[in-house]
Each structure stands twice: as structure tokens, then as C-alpha cells.
Image 1 (cartoon, rainbow, N blue to C red):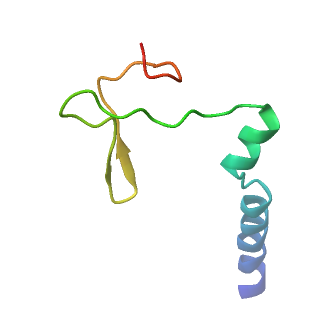
Image 2 (cartoon, one colour):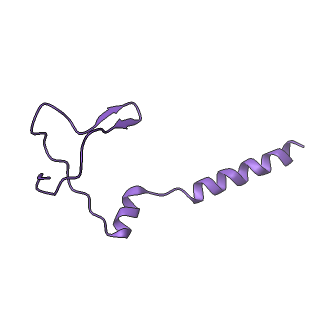
Image 3 (cartoon, rainbow, N blue to C red):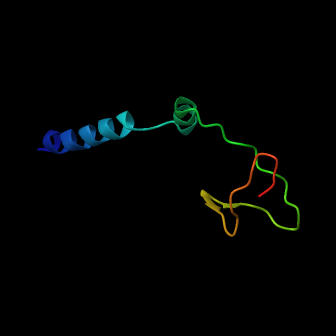
Length: 68
């Protein structure tokens, strides 16, 4: 019975590992090049990392030279 319960778990782990995607590799395949973030012009930052979370708020897109 334990072997029967182990089979779906092994199948699930196999599917999850087969579908894992490397973000950097995928961007390179799609030909997408991300620009480096510009320095803040005032006393604010574009992102705040807390643990495994990144919070973004109130920022629109900007060009590579930092202009809007």
C-alpha cells in the first residue's frame, strides 16, 4: 500500500522538475535584454525586498537612459 501511495508523489516530483524554467535562459531565448535600473532622482527606491518578496509601487516604465 505504501508503494502505491509513493507512486503519485514520485510522478508529481518528476513533472515539477521537468517543467522548471530558468528565467535568465528563457529571456535569452526570446531575445529580451533587460536594462539596468536607473539611479533614483529623489529620495526613493524603485523596489524594496523583504525576505523572498519584492515590493514595487508607483513606478512606470522608463527608457534605457532613465527618462520617462
